[in-house]
Image (cartoon, rainbow, N blue to C red):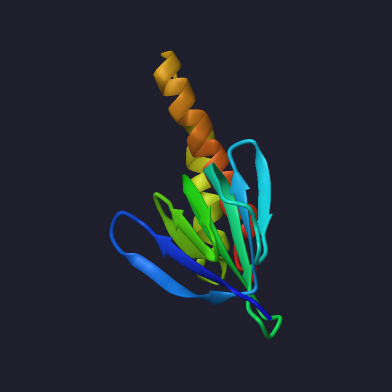
Length: 132
């Protein structure tokens, strides 16, 4: 079976570069899934879950925080601000981040946009906490 090569990169490092059977990513306006043979694509990522499945059917899940995805041939490159394996997200920490995000009092449009993004990020982390 043909496979995809997924490269997951943050500003700090390349988290992994390996073969996978399928990938699902959050886009800023929805979600997209990729299988071998996919047409080329460049997309803007949203906040949420990157889920990959290997050839054996084992799935892994990661929280990602925006960025870009590029599909070119069998290579899928995900460039994101940050990535955390969902199994490493503490429910307690995620709940604390959500509570802190709800407490922010934004006054300017820029502060409101930042607060909305923090709230979205915290809500997605809570929903993914401890999952895999």
